[in-house]
Image 1 (cartoon, rainbow, N blue to C red):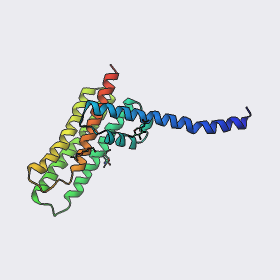
Image 2 (image 1 turned 30 degrees about the vertical axis):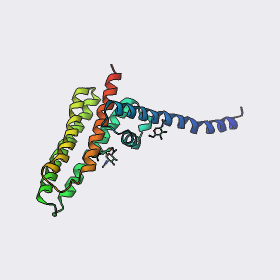
Image 3 (image 1 turned 60 degrees about the horizontal axis):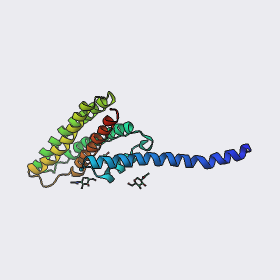
Image 4 (image 1 turned 60 degrees about the vertical axis):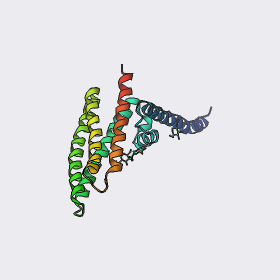
Length: 185
Ligand SMILES: *[C@@H]1O[C@H](CO)[C@@H](O)[C@H](O)[C@H]1NC(C)=O
Ligand SMILES: *[C@@H]1O[C@H](CO)[C@@H](O)[C@H](O)[C@H]1NC(C)=O
Ligand SMILES: *[C@@H]1O[C@H](CO)[C@@H](O)[C@H](O)[C@H]1NC(C)=O
């Protein structure tokens, strides 16, 4: 083969190889999310795949990598939600019940930001039980925040979608971590 034609062959082959690699990555995300859904009926398959696929480099990640990515997704979510609540609280027009709930949620999400950072450290150190406790506390924070609006008789919760996202992402992270743990014996 002349150099030019082998170059052509490589140029044709390379996109194919990249595509195969990307498909493998996507199929790890798909199969991981399928297992998540079986282990935890709370986890919505489409939510799981959409969330993981949207994360940078997730298509090339191993299972351990997907777990790190899922914890990072929680961190980005809770950090943004805390900021969002802070903005909402600047609006003077909330009724007193809703204002009280927002204030509680701000506290809850502030703790959740610390918890997920601690979870990241625990996971990196393979202290899975400790990481599990931290992520579970993030799930509880989202549930407590959401329930507060109902219990205090607020007209509606402006945080329903965000609380649900945090809850779902945490469920995914716990489930993936379970698989990592099972795999590492
Ligand atoms: C992964 O799932 C998505 C939809 O959830 C689908 O479009 C895609 O073809 C699947 N990829 C593989 C490699 O199975
Ligand atoms: C939180 O996570 C969900 C699910 O991945 C995503 O759709 C949403 O955009 C994220 N929100 C923020 C603020 O990062
Ligand atoms: C929470 O999110 C999941 C996945 O997107 C969805 O199936 C479910 O209906 C949502 N629940 C609420 C209460 O919004």
